[in-house]
Image 1 (cartoon, rainbow, N blue to C red):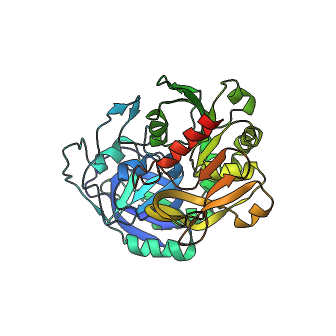
Image 2: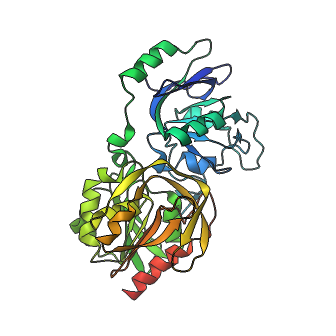
Length: 381
């Protein structure tokens, strides 16, 4: 049933995990029922950016920071034809789980409350739940499928019906083509009269990636994820960019094939899902992490300089470390916490990719220099 817009006063809500665990709380945002993969982020700020990040497509997002909504929702101001404060043109998460909702935000740029924003976009949310307990469960068990229901005022959730629904099986969004839902349908040109032209394969790109390329004087042609190598080369690009996006990278069969044909021909940079696609395109392998990396303080260690960068991340899959003995990529960065691969470089071609978001939004901008490195590769080529 599609969520509907209703008043947020006195609405009851429930989050049910696939193992039968129930979290009862208060509803906000839209009335309705959704399902998805329940994940958590330890980010302290940046909920407008996080909620609009296409990499969260198909997921019910839990924010561990206890108070959410305290600075409201910013305006839809534009730069380069893109909204400044959001990472796509709509909320991408299936639903939102928080501990405490701020009903009266205070910020000079706020245009509406978080509750109103979710209502406007038809996204249900639940608050008043023990997000610490939920997060500890997800860390122990791993991410889980779940159902989130927000009832209309005066109605009660039917727990027995939800439990029966969970027993029949909650649909796993990772078994579907999530990237198809967030990619552009037709090419979009962003022209800043720059010297270089980059084709960006849109698997669910965050707008700040586009902003970082444009502010460096790089013209961008944003194309659908299923464009062929032949179609991309017709633009005569100086470089190809592989964007972030949701879901299992192995589902991006056409993108993997395309990248495998392009990696020997043009300089290439990838972010997040783009890093996984690059690895798969040259014969590597990926796997699903237990609960992923979703925060603004993930430590990425440069294996060449031993310098550690604090980074923004949002991904649930990683490159298999055992595949490097047979592919033309080499590890560049690792996660200082769990030693997973965070960045790779091609051994002989001008191509590299990282698992984190150097464009941040939200988070630290310490690794924006990677966009400059991509530009240098195009200059050298």
